[in-house]
Amino acid sequence: RNESVCSITENVIFTIAGFDAPQMNFTLLPVIMSHTPAGTSSRTLLHFAQGVTSGRFRQFDQGSEEDNMDRYGSPVPPAYSLAKVTCPVVLYWGENDWLAHPTDVRQLAASLPNLVASYQVPFHTWNHLDFLWGKSADFLLYRPAIKVINQFMRN
View 1 (cartoon, one colour):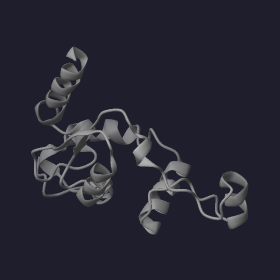
View 2: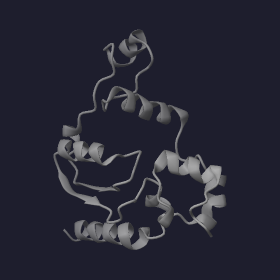
View 3: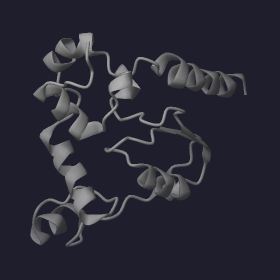
View 4: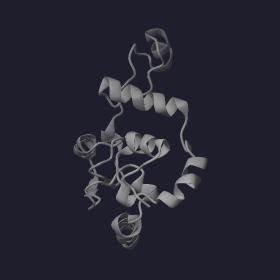
C-alpha cells in the first residue's frame, strides 16, 4: 500500500490525533472506523474543548455563572487539585500526540506530587491513537508498562 496517498477518513484521523502513517495499520482502518467514535461522550469532548480554550484544568463549565453557582458555589468552575492525587503515577506520552501535547504532559508531571516516571514513547511521531493501534505498541509501550506494573506488584 502506498501510505503517502491517504483517504479522507485517514486524513481526518491524522488531523485529530497527529500524523503517524508508519504506526498506522491501514488494513485495520475499516474496523477502527466502524467503532469510532467510541469510549467518550459529547460532554467529554466539550469539556476537553473548554480546557483547550481556557487554558485551565478545571471542572466542567455549566455554561452560565448562575448554573456554575448552583453546581459549584462559584461563578466559574473550580480548578482540579492535582495535589490530592497521592497514588504513584507513571505518565506515558508521545511527542506527536495532538490531544495530549508534550507541553501539557510536562505541566501535568510538574503538578503531580507522587510522579514515579514520565516516559516518552521512543518513536518520534507517536500519536494519541498509537497507544491503542500502533504497530509497535507491544514493544514500545505495553512491555515497558507491564514491567513497571510488575515492579509495583513486587513491592
